[in-house]
Image (cartoon, rainbow, N blue to C red; front, top):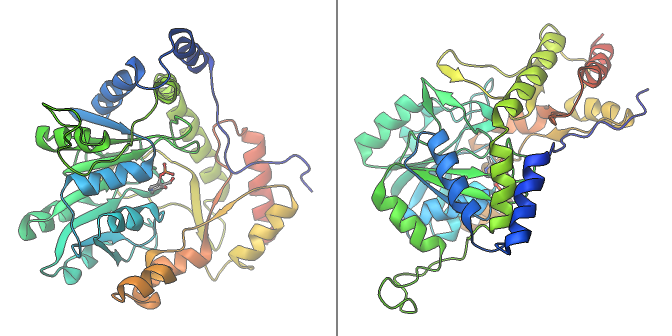
Length: 373
Ligand SMILES: Cc1ncc(COP(=O)(O)O)c(C=O)c1O
């Protein structure tokens, strides 16, 4: 029996964050201020983008990205089914319709071989989601987008710094969206960023995020905009986090390796598969699934871990299973994405906060090993 609680996630904050936040208070720049610009410049450069536009969350970054590429009523967007519902909701906020694409069972990423069959005259964009720190296979996506003249939105909420064939995610498609929520690789508490290399898209995103104030007469607005402005105080936290990002990556690598060493040879335990073309995998959290060879189900194992004070999270309920979306569009059904449904039932993730110790990881794995015998 393990008595000490092992949370599924925790945040490590340091002295730089404290210093920058204190500076915001000392200078009274708590709304808009210099940290916003610094975070935009540094983070966008880090992901090889010329432009970064901060937002209040990953969800608002996705909505801003959708609005910026000009999604309209009844446009269709092809999107990884197994994802956070921020993805289909952001598409819906524009009046457009998310169409779920099934995932690969071993990587949990969008199965790009299933994209083309869902394209029709209403299809306007593909939203790829680089889930759990592993990139989607982008070359085929780029090829399809070119062939059918579709835009590409990259959801990089869980993939800060991840690389596909040497290219940083968020810089590969037309526009990227990052989350800086508390459980993300770096955090502002709440926050997000849109990234792009297109000056036109950057200009439009900047305007839309700030109520599309008029350029000559400020109060004669250029479009129907939003207030998605990230406060300076949140950006200060994000910048402090960003300056420590290489150490965060080291901790993530340690956690990934320790879990993998422990779990790689257990019958029925399927640890994350990493494709050969991934030039930088940065585990967001340690995700895995159980197949038929494991003696008990995912739900039963989660219960055993819970009884031992170990927190876990189940995999996403995919888009094709969301009744509100099925009822609203009547364009897809529950059994449309069998792999996403399989992962929903059998997938979960283990405690992966940066402060988890190797001993704690071993405690988690010892319980899984014991149950597996
Ligand atoms: C893949 C993915 N996209 C989007 C979001 C939404 O981001 P936020 O919570 O910052 O709105 C999340 C989770 O938070 C996510 O995991």
